[in-house]
Length: 282
Image (cartoon, rainbow, N blue to C red; front, side, top):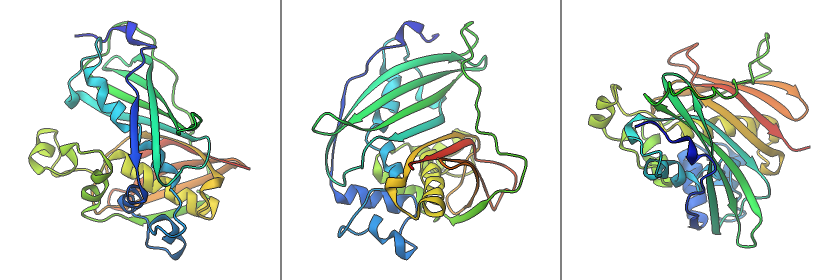
């Protein structure tokens, strides 16, 4: 059934997220943090700081909740996480309660499918926005309804060698760790489910790859200081498998903007993250 364009502007139920330092540490381990001495603060409760990309975790259930929205009612198997934007508005606490207010922001017609954009403000207990997310989901088979195509992706790498390159080896059990932060999609752990989706084995969560790429920029351009990391936007272009080595290429295009692209050592030139950028605080 076609997506009803009247859903644009629809607010979804608020999502409460109660968390402790354990959740912040588990997320950091799920995206491979802790190998370097200056990453201890991301995995140890004494002096703990949240890695900026932790900001995708509290609102994530809203993305899965799209399948139950009246006027959307899509098959979860047909949903592919296409793009992600995260903007940090104030320091992320390492425990407490956060509330996310999601809203369907747009529906775009991509002919072979539709893109649903979901905006999500996440607030602390004082009512201030801690971070903002835009989830863009591609729904296979739901396009061709004559709607607008929406904006074209930007953030193309310049025509020169990257300024910095980072390699990060993932664990063969990386997805098994990452899923404990709330994304229990069997695609990332069950070989039979992965086979039904057309993969020879379970793939890594896109947001786990997102976290690795964010870590690379945090390390190379922010000295692992979360206060310097303002925002990140990526497009998920190809899958990554647990055990792959993620290679993140970075170009400094302005004092406050880093263009990013990522592939794996196992499949050179097949980019898993494209049209990506990180913005820095002054």
